[in-house]
Image (cartoon, rainbow, N blue to C red):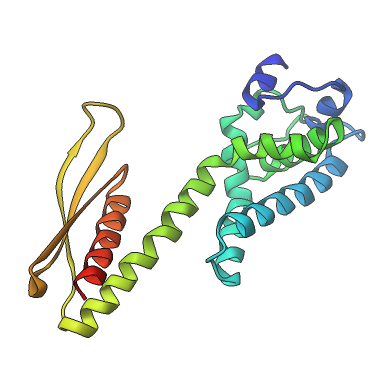
Length: 218
């Protein structure tokens, strides 16, 4: 069990809660279904709250789409796999962990158990770690679209053309791979640069820099 606590970054005061959270209904009548119910509600609250506070520019439709993606059975199964929950779950004979939602459901049960063992602030800290990657991906996607779309719309309207992006270079000699991108407006004879940990982020920065430059020149 210590291995799971290490993966979670949380140690239970009440061992009975985590034992129940890891017990599937095929193994015992004293199982994790009620904890799963609670964990599902807490996870939905956390994700909704995080999206509302972190991304005030997103529409209700995008908020709904991003939330659905994070709490989907497929994503919850992936998070559960990273925690190696399959090593700890108790299932009945003949039951399998692949091709179903048992892993994700167990993750929700653990969330419910953490809440009962501590409180909501502590549970939020664990959820922040577990779903950090998902929110970073949302940040990248939401940030990506506005400057690039705004620049494209402006260039189409002003010059009847499109901005061009090209990778100048990429480097990983001093840490994580970073991309260097140029954004060029041929008709205005303007070039800006951007860098980022992905090509999309580098293009985003270059587009944002171009918008700033056009504003100064305009």
